[in-house]
Length: 91
Image 1 (cartoon, one colour):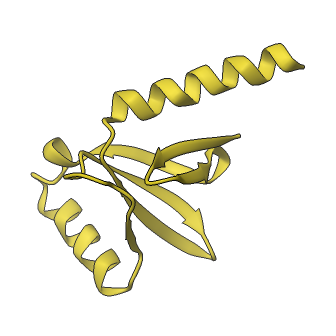
Image 2 (cartoon, one colour):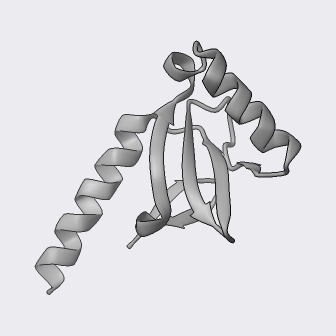
């Protein structure tokens, strides 16, 4: 199943490693170092039309890609749960 994360961009739910709130997780130096390294390696894609609230880490092309999204972690997670219910009902 695919999940809409912003700017007409969908990611495969099976490729999602984690969905993180930018404000609360970037307090950690380790997280800031990870995001800085991802940016230097060209592994960050900004799919937000506004100021990003969340970043989604996905497995992609033998590595990881970080997507910046304007949606909250709760909104993206609701889409995952809602989509899973639709798929189960469709059979």
